[in-house]
Length: 499
Ligand code: AMP
Ligand code: ZN
Image (cartoon, rainbow, N blue to C red; front, side):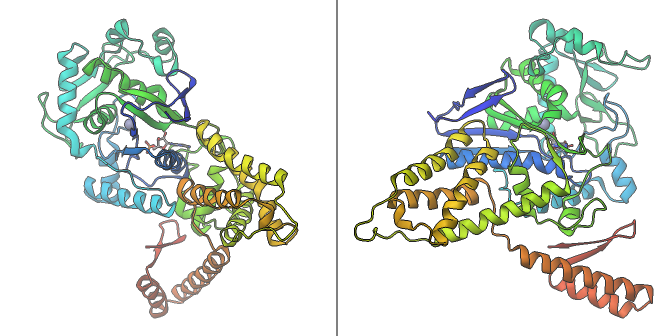
């Protein structure tokens, strides 16, 4: 049994983590909806689960990590009505819906790679699992919790709640939930205000639709995660994750669907990450306060004072516990940049140290040795306490002066025991590289590259304004050959990315 404790949203307590199958962990994380670019808030959630995945592996678990791609079934309205977001975007960009899906899936993968997140072991798509979703919907109808109205299938929340508490995940009673919901409209086909669609009848405007026992249609959003998690992880599995904003509806409905279909609570540990905010407001597509990762890496967003490398941003996120909100600001990013530099420089010194026997008549400094050991042991202790990366980093920063003192020769490697020095070296490496997924960042080179790119972009702009297309094309084409793509945005700004 491991010493890992996780905060389970379902029980609202920290619990000892015991997987269903010893040595193995099944983990499902709700993935992105690929009708647009992911913003930094989405990235925070995916990076948090990357750390969790990495730590479970560090503990020796074999993890089956499933993170889906939502590529169908997202409607504009929050009441199973309105335009299908994929169809709408396809019309807007004059592309096929599956071209939209491909474009934003590739973009998502690239961003995840830049942040050095490990890919999930399975990445299923909603469109690839229509049969499974239809089958599950049918079973829910057969079990008496679903009803069909005019080609759409709804989940009967009030009926379900008579047997099982619908609001269990957020600890709310049905009456309170009903109070907070809009009245049933005259046109509404639903029996109850909280009922949600399992399958939605398609109109001609819906470009993505499939045949089903209820006519042409497409799946509702929630059924996708229930069907795919069951397929790859079973009727009950260890960990389900996502942002906190998903708990009240999406995850609540996932529990209801699985219970209605299989009579089992699907998930043992529900893990929810807190939100990335900008001036205290949650970053979201709809609030229009979303930063694109690319805008950070190039420094092109109007609110940014400079560019920040992906590792800098990743480190910035690690400094806060995943269940606390994190506010985005230039100051915080700059502080993180300095912190990472200090830590990484110490790490590079540390790996170069070689222990030697104390000189004649000298011995190890027992007090220092014990302090170093204690701080190193705190790494695992804090990660075992619901993945507290912030506290691990605090312990690491306490060790930096010790490392620097060895460099400055105020103390020597022989002041530590051989075991302690080697433990310190090994744990720093495992944590910084394997668990935190940080990579060496040569900030100086990065800043130089940013500067050179800005210069080239300015020259190209000037050339274009003088109608000197030979020069402007030359810059673009040469950069493209080097794998640097320059993109002219509709709003006149210019972005660049390294392929
Ligand atoms: P979406 O593509 O909108 O379904 O979101 C993908 C993931 O990002 C979900 O797990 C959301 O909960 C999460 N998410 C959305 N906004 C934020 C935010 N501001 N901070 C952290 N996570 C977020
Ligand atoms: Zn989901």
